Each structure stands twice: as C-alpha cells, then as structure tokens.
Amino acid sequence: MNKTFDGSKDKPTGRKTDHSVNGRSARPQMVQNKKRAPAQRPADQSKPSVKRPVQKHAPSKTGDKALMLKAMIKPLLVLVIILMLVILIIKAVFFYQDETDLLIREVSIEAGTQRPYIGQFFSEEPAFPDLVSTNLDFDEVNINLPQTINFNIKMYGRNFPCKLFILDTTAPKGEGIPQKMFSCDEIPDAASCVTGIEDVTDVMLSWNEVPDMSEGGNYIARALLTDGAGNETIVDVPFEVTKDSTPPVIEGAKDIFAYIGDSVIYRDKITVRDDYDTNPVLTIDTGSVDLNSEGTYEVVYTAKDFSGNESSVSVNIQLAEKPEGYVEPEVVYEEARKILEEITEPGMTEEQIALQIVWWCRYNIRFILKTSSSSWTEAAYNAYINRSGNCYSTAYAVKALFDVAGIENMIIERWPYQTATHFWNYICIDGQWYHCDATWREGYDSYFFMYTTEELLDFWQGGWNGFQFKQELYPESASKSVQNRIDYKNHTIKEG
Image (cartoon, rainbow, N blue to C red):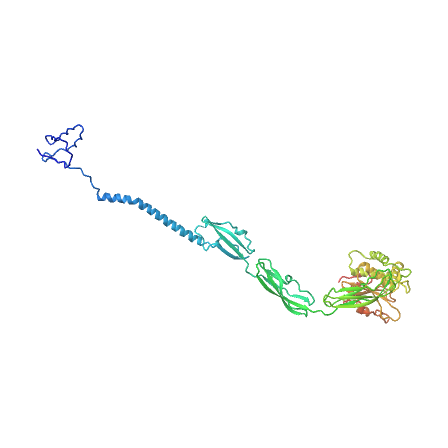
C-alpha cells in the first residue's frame, strides 16, 4: 500500500488514518472534540494520491488593468467636467468683459441738434440687445436745454451709472438793423437793433461798443449777443446820424386883444414847424399877465425841438373892460350850432361842411357898412340874429361856425390898406390851408372858397385886388388848386 501527501502540515492527532480499498477513501472517523478531517479526493488506482496545500490564485494582468481603468474613469470625468466648467466660466467672464467694454459711460451732444438714443452709449450693438435697458426716457429729454443727466443702463442684470451731457458750444447768430437817428438822441436799445437771432437758448443783447456820434455822420456800433451757455457773438449795427442845429419857427403869433373876464386862448392860430422835429414843444410864458386888470402885458412863446434848439417870439396882450352890449362867446357858439345843424347832414366831409358854411353866410348875411361891433362876439351874434353885417361881422360869423364844426381856422386882415380894412377866413382842410371869403362884394355875385394864396392875389375886379396881407404871419397855403371841383351855384363839391 502507497502513502499519500496532502502536502499540508497538520498538527498530530495521536491516531493513524485508515485508507479504503479500491482507491476510495472512507470518511475518517471523528474523534470527539476533535476537528473533522478534510475530505479526500479518490486516489488514482495507479498512483497514490498526494494531499496538496490549497493556494490563493493571483489576479491576472488584464483584470488588473480593467480595474485600474475603472477606478480612474470617475475622477477623470469629474476632472473634465470641472475643466469644462472652468473654461465656460472663463469664456463667460471674457464675454461679459467684452460686452461691457462696449458701453460708453459718458456721451456729449450739441444742444438742439439731435435726439439722443441708447445706441449712442455703445461702440457697437451688444450680442443680446434685449437684455439691455435704461431708466431714462430719451423722448422726454429737452435737447434745447444745456444740462447733465445722470441715469442707469442695465446690462445683463447689472446697472451701470451713465451721464448724458447736453452742451451748447455754438455762439448765437444775428443781423444788425441799419439805424437812423439824430445826434441828440439816445442810442436805442440793442435788442431793437438786431434781427434774425438764432440760438437754442435765450439770448441777451447789450452794446459792446458805441462810438461818439455827437457830430453826426455814419458810424458802426457793435452789439453783444450772449446765449444761456455764455457763448458770445458781436454784431455790427450801422448808424446814420444827423446833427440838428436849426431852431424851430413859430408862426401866427400876434398881439391879442381881450376883455377882462374873457377866456384867453393864447395858442389860437399859433403853429410851430421844424426842419426835423415834427412835434416841437411850445411853451407860453404868461407870468406877467393880470387878466383882472386893464393894461398891456407881454407874452413870450418859446419853441424847442428834440435837439434842444430854441426860438422865442414875444407879443402883447391888451386887456380892457367889457363894453356895453358885450356878448359872451358861448352865446355866439350856441347860435352857430343851431345854424350848422340846419345846413349840414351826417356823413359830410370837412370840405363839404366848410362849403355849406361859406355859402350860407354869403347869402344869408346882408351887407351893411355900419354895424355895432365893439367885440367879435357882438359882431358875429348880430350877424346871426339880424342877418346883416359888414366884412368883420361876416368873417367872425363864418369863424364861429368853423369853430363849432371843429375845422381849424384863422382870421386874415388886409394889410396894408389905403381906405378901409377887410377881413376874411383861412381854413385848414386835409392839412392844407385855403382862403375863404363870404362877404358880399359889389359887382361880384359869388363867394371865395378854398382859394390858394396865388389864386387869391391873382383875383382882380375893377382894376384892383384888395387881398394883400402879411403872409409871414400865417401858415403857407396849399399850392394845388381845387377850383375845378367847386360848384358855386349849387354849393357842392365834385369828387376828384
């Protein structure tokens, strides 16, 4: 019988092991409180079986690599994900930086030139314009007002403070208006001498340079235009300056006769003319006159034009006690109003009214050589009441009617004369002076209406004229004749 090894080294048990016949081993008998012997494979009949020790198998190289690879995949994936996230973050940072670099924080525009918009605050359009907004309504911005506007632009969730500067750097424009003035005048305000002013803000005007224009001539004054932003422009204004050295002329001043208690009209028949001043100032010095005492007093008329040139004329006023039968002027005017209402109609011109007055007096006041005429009021009143009078009565009757009709008029007295004086009327119609005479004239069955001085002095009857007078005491008459328009028979005026 052969011996087998299990190749294992067990601890001794104190018993021998029995082996069965035919190569099969029998179960070893277990000894109480002893470990069971391991099962034995059947022994080869030809060769005795040997007991070999059990050994652990070492892992193969292929399996090890797979395990290692599997162990490395997860960390690698994590690393890749982290790396991709880092790359995305870096790209996002650079994208955000590039996008925000497009933003222009401060923009300036010229006032009044253009309407601002959000696109002006970017160098180019952002990648996602829908994610860009602002809290400023550009349509509500007053582009004509220089100002600084602070606002925010929200870009990708972040607010960026921005500024809009509306600047006025353009100087105002204007054009000088040529001026004419007298050397004595004050220079007009600069604002009235410049036109066509253009600027987005209010413009103030003042004189920057004014030459001495006291000697007259042509000059250039310079106006300064300053807008609300302080921009300035100089505008040249040409001046044509006239030096006035001629005093005004006083006409119609003559001695006055009046009764104590009468209202004296010192300016009656007085006119003042000047070569430049259309309205020279006339002052009347009556400081020496005592209207309550008989006597002769001096009255001084002084005319002054706007250049300061003066002229003076002195006359005497003679005051006397009212004679018996004196008629107050208002009584005369009351009678004149009654007559005027009878001979005129509403809508008549001054020329038509004047013709009716002269015509009525010519054919309603009978001529008598002697009449009571201690005063003009008595003479005119008697002419109205008695329907008679001489040339003095008739002339003053005509005058009173002219007065109540509001027609400017004067009395002219013949001068010089040889045997008798004569009176007639001088009226102003449409700014022109004309002669009128309503007194009966022997051998002449008509009257004189609106004659020029030339026509009146050219009238001859019976070898004489009789209309000479001191022309220098009265305004110059019209030079153009209107006689072709006068219908003396029907006392009407033709249109022309």
